[in-house]
Image (cartoon, rainbow, N blue to C red):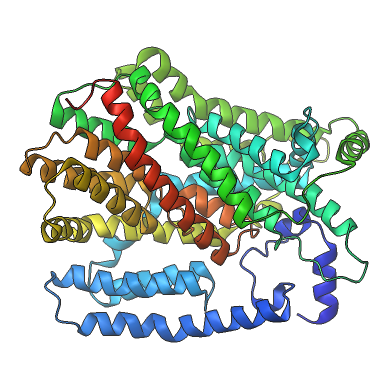
Length: 536
């Protein structure tokens, strides 16, 4: 990309950049300072050398592991280096790892690739197509101005980020984290586009400007991803790890956790965790513009320019509304009938979020904007510009999570660590459970993390003569962590796919929040468990 292309890129809005499909951009496609360019070149060069080297060295080490586990661990180490250093686009790093696993004979190709058909992958596809329509027809911008026009919210970047995080957290308590982030991403992009315009207005006309490298964009996108994870802890149905952990705990201890008991236990933890989240994100990613002076007037003027809602916007809203309604239906059924009722089982199975997402996206090709001309809300050419890279990236992440469970590598590591550390007290086992759950969730989905770690922790506690309730519930909460990499959770992958969050910023912010959240769980959760009379 030559200098004129760089200037052209800087002059476009966030929405324009996203609609162009240039999410995983090379160095020449970004506007970088000389120092940033030197750092990026060094980081990528190191990764190009280190990734194969660390895999080969680990393969040659005489480690007492099953052959399949040894090979998987070696490949996974190399892939993590590729993801962190980005010598190749991150989705390509995942594909290289999958290819290496098959070539090394860890498992046959059909078994390795089977998890790529996960419902979550289809959730991504459907949600991205819906987001594409919302961006293309201006509905996301209309939503963004609605939020910014709320009294007091639009006066500072910090308030906007905090308010958007609250909306995300509350929604994710009854809607899956993935669905919450998918439905709110277009609005986040719209808000970022507005703030980016304000930032650019304060710069000299010839100053370099890249709308996808703003610190305020990093904070806004990460509060969306991380806020969903925090809010998902509030109810048993907020996140799959909650249901997995609760079921395993009830089976092991005989203590039943009701919906309200779970909320009473989780609410203080979630509230404090959210405050920490906002503080951490604003400190590490200090917005380029603090006070949004004149925003209220600007928002009012821009809303007036939008005029009446168009037919395309109405159709997009219908498709989006149907999708959201179907997404939240299982949650409301659980509220009234219980999540262990036959009705909930039938509804949640048939209204699978992946199926709902692609159904909602399909409506965009059925709802006409001009029937006489047979013009519909979205064309396939427009829809095909969605971020296929993120779809591939998370698909490979699901594959690695399944392999960690199928080869029992995660169980081997967890059991060996517990044995080597000689854990014998509630505090020690709880801390171990939290650390293990966070570490495992960094490279697998939070669902896989709970399914792997909680069954490891319970027998360790029982063997030590300790009630497993506290360590197991701590592991369940910590399984929803893992904020450092795009593959850690679907919501991380979705916001990373926006292009507004550099991998280095995600790692730094995620690492700090991982540590802060882990400490909070270790200190506060046992107190809440004791206050409610559990684990006695």
